[in-house]
Image 1 (cartoon, rainbow, N blue to C red):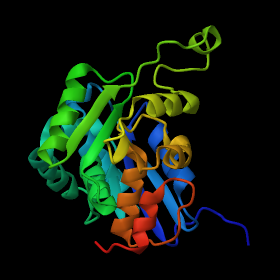
Image 2: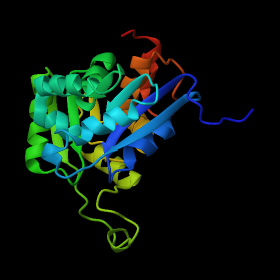
Image 3: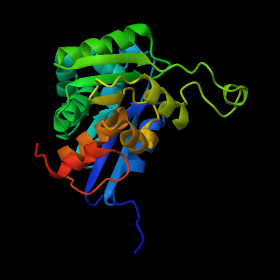
Length: 255
C-alpha cells in the first residue's frame, strides 16, 4: 500500500498566522510516516497582539474538533513578549477551548530542546524582518531561562546578487538556504554549544544537517523544535532523519 497521509501514529495541530505557510510546510516535510499535520489559521493584525483573544481562541476551538495529540502555537514573538508566566496564562486560556488537547508553545519547546541536548551556551539567529526590540526580548527570554547567549543577531541580506534581490518570486520573508548556511558559518562563535534559527516564518530546516556536520554542534530551528516537542508530547518515537540530532533524543529521553 502507498502512504495516504493518515495520522495513525499521531495527529499534530498547528496554529499559524493566516499569511504564513512556512510552519505547516516544514512540519509536513519532517513528519515521519503515520504522523499528520492539521492547520488552523489565526488572523494576524499586529505581531504584538497576535495572541490576544478572540482569534487564536476561536481557531483553537475549530481545530480541536478533530481529535489529535497536541496543538502547537507557532509564533515565536508571542513567547518573547509574554515571557514564561504570560505563556503559561496563554496556554491555560487556549486549553479551555482545545477540548482537552495539550497546547504547546514555541519558546518552551526551544528551552526543552536545549535541555534535551544538554547545552547551555547558545547562539541566536533571528530572521531579517525581526526588529531590534524583538531580538532584545529574545535574548532576555533565554537568559532568564538560564542560558548563556554568546551571540544574537538578525540575519542580514546585504550583499545579494542583483538576480536574487530582484527575484519577483521572492517574498520579503524568504531566505535561501545558501544564505542561512553562509551566515551561520561566518557568524556563530566557537563558544556556542548550539545555534537556534529563531522565528517560525524562518524557512531553515533544509540547512540543519549540513550545518551540524560543518559546525560540529547541534543546529535548531523554530519549527524543528516545535515539531520535536509535539512528537514528544504524542509519544512518537519514529525516526526523523535529515533534520538534526535533536530527533535522536526522542528515543533516549522520556517526558
